[in-house]
Length: 244
Image: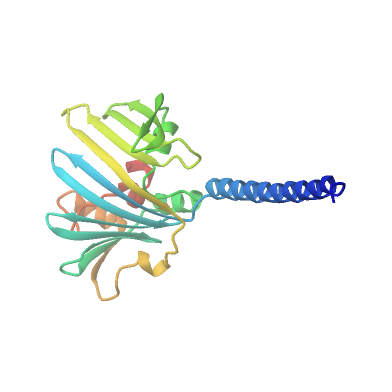
């Protein structure tokens, strides 16, 4: 029996090594799957933002699927929903169940085709970096590692904190207006990727009473007063980058 102990010990060690190797392979596979998931461009997003300025506080909820957008907020006590899908930019007053569907400009539709994989909202970080924003420092914000960028232009100064990862989503944006000195702070308090969202979620209820307006008519009418129940709050998605 004593002579067999080394053999048994070797067998036990061999099993332990095999199990450890198998566990290591599983851990490596989990890490690889996690990296692949973070690298993959999400097809849908949800986020909530809190905007604070001298005018008060506004809470936004955003959903997107490809270039489709649904955004909800409350303006003067009225729930307003913005839908951007295909040819139309639609604004609906959820109390009266009335709204306006504005045909989007050719430039905005072309941007959908050329940027099919780009999220249509929450792009402050990418936009500022593309314009030459200066990297200031790395720091933790809302318990997340972030990178702070700063851009100064004719409008004023903008600072944006983006997550220090491959997705680089904004966590906080602060804008200081040059002319008035006003300050506006936007905090994104939630980001969720790859939600299962149906296309119908980005279209108004068929029972909503909509006024359909051609793009040129909207531009002409907007020069003399508001068109629809609320302002166009995502101008680049209606006009294209020319009026972003």
